[in-house]
Structures are given as C-alpha cells and as structure tokens.
Image (cartoon, rainbow, N blue to C red):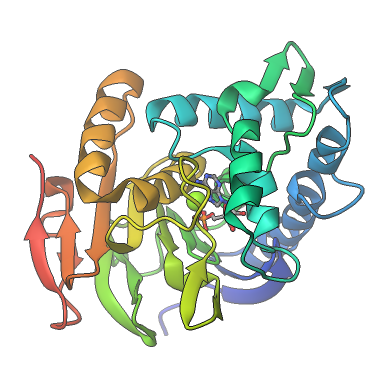
Length: 326
Ligand code: AMP
Ligand code: MG
C-alpha cells in the first residue's frame, strides 16, 4: 500500500476572518498548533481595535513617541515605503476615515464636511519611525488591515519551514500563501473568487509545486454596506476619503512576499488598471520584487500580466481574459 502522508486542516477565527490552515506531512498537527498560536499573537499585536494591541498603544499616544516591538516597526516602515511606491494609494494612516465610515463598528455615511476635515490627517508622513520609536501626528491614526493578514501568512510560511512537513496552504480571508508541495507534486491551484457571485470562481491560478508564494485579493465585495440605495465598500481612496471607484471589482497580486502582495492588492484596487500597471513596473524595477497581478473590471474583463501566461485558467466565461503589459 502506498503511504498517504498526513493531511490536516484546521479552521481558526483570527484577524477578523476564518483562517483555513492545511498542512501535509508528518508534523502537520504540531505545525497547525504553532500556526494558531502565532496568528493569535499577531492579532494581539496588529489589531486596531483590541485595546491592548501594539497598534492601539500607538493610536492613543496623542503625538508622543511610543517604543514599539521590532515587528511593528518593520511593518510600519514597510508600509510607508509602499505608500511612496503607490503614490499614496496604500496608506495605513487612512484609519480615521475608515472609522468615520464605521468599518470595524457601525457603518454610516459621513458628511462631506466631516471627510474634508479628516483628509489633512492622512499621509505616510504622519507616522514616523525613529530607531525603535514610532510617533504619530496628533489626531492621526493607523490601521494595518490592508497588510496585517498578508504579513501573518508570510510569518506562518517561515514557521512552516521549521517543521518536518512537505507542504502547507494558509488561507486568511483573501490571502493565500503556499509552502512547499502537496503529496504527488501537483501544482497548487488557487481560485480567484468571482466578485459578482460568492459561490463561483472567476479563474484559477496554478502555482508550481515547491514554490512558496502569496496570492492576495482585495475586492469591494469583501466588506460593504448599503444605504439609500448606494453601496459603500471598505477600500478607501486616500485622495478623496470615499470608497474607491477605479473601475475594478477585485485586484489580485501574486508575489513571493506575502505582506507586499497584500499591501499592493489594496493599492491596485484603488489605482485601477492603467496606474497599477505603471506602479508594478516601477516597483519591480526599484525594489526588485517580481509582481504579477489579475484585475477584474466592472466591464467584465479579467486582465492579467504576462508572467501568468500558462498559469491561469479561464473558469468563468462571463469574464473575457486579456493580457496587459509586457
Ligand atoms: P484589504 O482587504 O487588504 O484590501 O484591506 C482593506 C482594509 O484596509 C480596510 O478594511 C481598511 O481597514 C484598510 N484600508 C482601507 N483603505 C485603505 C487604503 N487605501 N490603504 C491602506 N489601508 C486601507
Ligand atoms: Mg491588502
């Protein structure tokens, strides 16, 4: 009888989502226990709402410097860098506006004057990292919601390497991270959700066995509310303070660094197709990250970068596939 390597799956509620953790190999159970512990630790560090979190401490400092943990310093420094690279489309200082729209609490539509009053608090320069200290301008706040899950998935992939396992898939609400390979050595198949139908896929991306990478999707459909016949979603354009309207229904980024993939999927959703392509080219050149992406537009197009040729399958004929860039 051929031996079937152990496969273990666990579902954990953490970081405001249901994490699905699948591990193949001898130490699957131990790896999953480690993953769970780590997710809860990161949630406590990174949550904007937990009153004991490192982020909360920074947000309550009223302009004073706060000594922070190395991990938090690293994520904030990286976030500032990604803000610069995306012309501010990704910006963790968006927090006061996210709160004004009631995301994380009770949703509401803020008045125009209220938004105009909050816009001056937004900008990567409002948060400073000096050595091991972080200082936020008075009134400014940070929200790591657009990068925290990706960061966490990357940390779990590093932990996976410390165990005697063959492969793992970590799925954290729109963030999928592969590690190693599954038994049989078949490619990983990561489904991209159809933004218009939660029960269907728009496409499937194949990641070669043995490759550890992240596939991260940001979409208007992931969190929204309706009021007065209008739909308001959770990804805010930092230039306007309103839910972004860039002609996209979702943006998926494929990159070996999971935190980068997460931050960029949010940025690309705000930027729209043309500016995302420009930003990705600049970022690849300046930072050396290899970035591929998939954008689903409100005109029914599924745009993908040349690096995905042969890796992406057309699951849903409602979308017409088109290669962009290259
Ligand atoms: P994601 O699902 O990764 O696209 O992240 C969206 C979450 O990040 C939202 O629920 C907000 O908490 C926060 N957010 C919204 N707009 C932005 C933005 N432009 N830049 C950074 N974070 C944002
Ligand atoms: Mg994101």
